[in-house]
Every structure is written in C-alpha cells, then in structure tokens.
Length: 156
Length: 156
DNA sequence: CATTTTGTTCAGTAAATACTAAACATTTAG
DNA sequence: CTAAATGTTTAGTATTTACTGAACAAAATG
Image 1 (cartoon, each protein chain N blue to C red):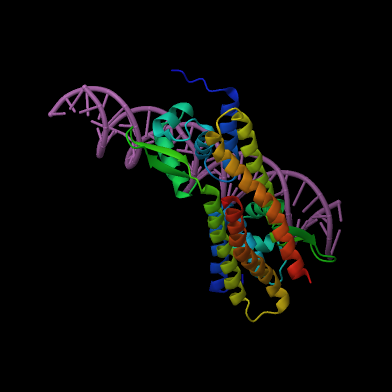
Image 2: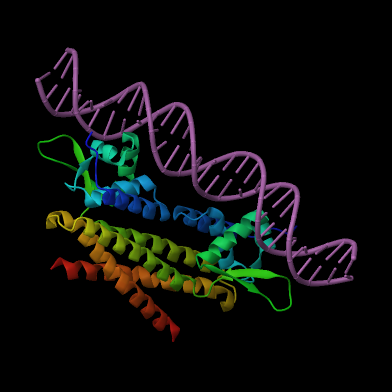
C-alpha cells in the first residue's frame, strides 16, 4: 500500500511519542497524538491510525481511550461516512490546566493533613508543611485565573 | 527495636507514596519524601529512613538520588556527627515550577516544528498546532512571573 | 591497624506495563 | 440474510521497573 509519508512527519510523530513517554504516558499514545496534530484531515479512524503508525488495532483502541480520558482528543462521527474518527480536542490544553489544578489541590490537602499531625509540635518542624501548603494554595487560586486570562485574550 | 511510630504518621507517609506513584514517581520515593515532611528532626540519614520505612538501604540510596535530582530534597552533612543526612529542600516547590517551565517549552517547540512541517498547508490544518504553540508560549511567559509573585509575596 | 559504621553498587526477582495477534462483536452494504 | 468492514476485548509475551539482599567501598573510631 501507498504508505509513504515524508520522513519529517514520521520523525515528528516519534518525537511526540518520546516526549509523552518522558512524562509518563505510553509512547503509542504520544504517537497517536502526534499524528493527529499533523494529519490531513485532522480526524482519523482507528484503521488509519493503525496503518500509519504501524501498530495493532488493539493498541490504537486502548490508547485512544486513554487520550480521550485525559481530555486530549475526542471521538467524532461524521454524518454519512463510516464509523468514528478521532481528532485533537479543540479545548484540550485549557482542560489539561484544570486537571493540573486537581493535582495541586491534592498536594495542598496532603500538606494540611500533615500539619494536623504536627499540630502540637514547635513551629520549626511545621515550617516545611506550611510552605508546601501555602504555595499550593497560591497556585490553586492563581492558575485558574491565569487560564481564564488566556481564554479571554485569545477568545476575542 | 523501638519502631513504634503512630498509626497516622504511617498513613500519611503511605498517602504521599500513593500520590507520587499516581504522578509517575516510584512509591518509595514518595514515602521518603513523606517521611521527611513530618520527621523529627527534619533531617534523616539513609539508615534511619531504611528502618522507619522498612526498606532496603539500596532502595533508599537510589530513591534519595532521584529525589535530589528532581530537586525535592537535598543532602546535608552535619558538623560533628556521622555522615550525611537528607532533608526537604527549602525552595523545593519553586524549583519544581521552573522545571515545569522546561516541559512547557518542549511542547511549544514541538508545536513550532510541527508548524514548519505544515508550512504550506491551509490555515485550517495549521490551527491545532497554532493553538498548542500559543497557549504554551503564554504559560512559558506567565508561569515564571507568577512564581516570582509568590516568592516576593511570601519573601517579605 | 582492626573493627565498626555507613552508604553505594550490583545481581537477581517479582510485578507491572505496553504492546501484538487473534477471537469476537457490531454495524454497514449488497 | 450474507458478506465485508470496523472496532473492542482477551490472552499471551517481552520489556521495563521497583524493589531486595549481599558484596563491596570508604571513612570514622578505638
């Protein structure tokens, strides 16, 4: 089959895969995401992904599910044609920021439960946890604000 | 040996371990970090860590090295006493934010190299990558500013 | 110098993970 | 209905990873 995509595109896909792997997400998920960033058209089916990326359909199925779950891609179905397609989710990055806030909250709460444990201890010992709590409370408050600023700046 | 630390402290340590694991860092590294957040004194030796956390010295050695590398703890040596101790790094969280900026930069650069690939394509196809580039450029610029605001607000 | 105390490195292991390939299910088209 | 196309689930595999325990190295103490 005519499976000759330019060298550079393959390399791009592979780079995205490696970056994802570095950040703890399976490389294949990164490859899928990478391809969906440059594919024409922007929406691709499971079969197309499997062929272009030389991966099994099972792998594509699992990893698209993962990418949907973390909010980076979405499943769409086109009116007439075949079954379903995947594409980069238009608001992917903003939503990722929101997820980041959830993590930050977890750290803030952990710091607070630690402070409860050290309730009766001298300030010197509590300092570590107070700093952890305060900075996370700060970002928990400011990150959504920053994200909102982004959305309005670009939105117009 | 008198190894009876309160229930709640063990649970705290285990919770930090689980959160770390969730974020892709080995659980044992999280346990070490958790214990260093509540230990008295705040600095602990490899041997102490191994005993409290019921882990092998080898594991402690590897994981402290990891934690130092990511900037969360530091190695200190006390004047008279034994060899070296570990403690939470005073500026840990701010430095972590800086590292986050490095990742964001990687995404921005990836988006740009993708845009180079689609240089001659129609705008419709370039949109995905432009959005990815722009939001990452935004945070690459704003995150350090936010962090600086934190440092001055608390610094006084 | 010999002994103890402390930390690192290394070899081995058990469990988790990222896949593949094939069986199965479901829809679409003739 | 039958056949083709598409996607999911499952079973199996190979690799990676997070550990342990022991050998080793280096320094401090007597």
